[in-house]
Length: 346
Image (cartoon, rainbow, N blue to C red; front, side, top):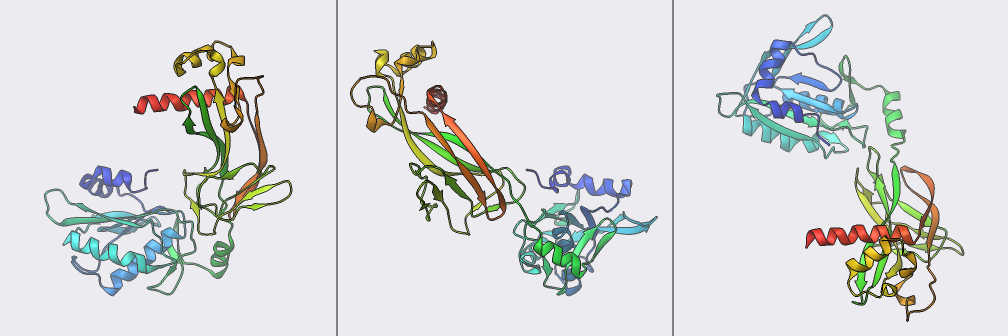
């Protein structure tokens, strides 16, 4: 996901010329500031200026702070009016970059400061501070000992009620469950040991903390050592983890595995590709679905379809229920996709 500053940085120095021509307005997500000096240092008043702006954006919807642009009030709105490029740009940027982590409490790890040089000038230009939307609001300015919030009419000190609401607001994440396949081993005679993997994916807009999975059967096993607190009841199984485990946005985390497998020996063939094509032609009685440990000698076909149901959630994600069925045709399709991936890699 691109940051809010991406478009500004991609335009480079021309952006700062254009905002003056366009008399660009400050918004909920965009703020212009100037330093009290030409550059090369970070005075107390400049530290306060940056801290208030960054705290305000962090406590709202995030945005971009641009240092080096003067504004003036026009019809009740602050608009870009003149450029005030910063000299000793790299040193000043580094000073601000170093100071940012200590300006806010709790810290906002997503803050980034970028230097953009003016055309034709060396070590002179503007500082662009990207402030992503924060899941750790409210943030307190350690410089002012106050809370600030950016609004459509500027940055202001937050009221007690606003601070309380942010502190107790539910930052609910959103999880989805999926069932994937992990290739385990093959005996070389067209018997394949496989593992089904139940995974939780963060499809929301905030990190998800301490996810968990409860199943109606106990035959599933932890997918990794991260699931350090499996708890089992008489008819249910649970997979839990420590409170510091986080699934970040768009990440996926394997939780539980289940043994299964495919036996192609009844095709009478010796090459996997030929066996796969035989099954694809509709001869499903030529392949058996069951764990490797139960395949044994050729005998009557007795597929072991996998059915699993239960619930999942996290400290900040609502509980959801699910039911998944993996039959022989579904497993075969999953297997073929994994084999194709392996062929492409090799």
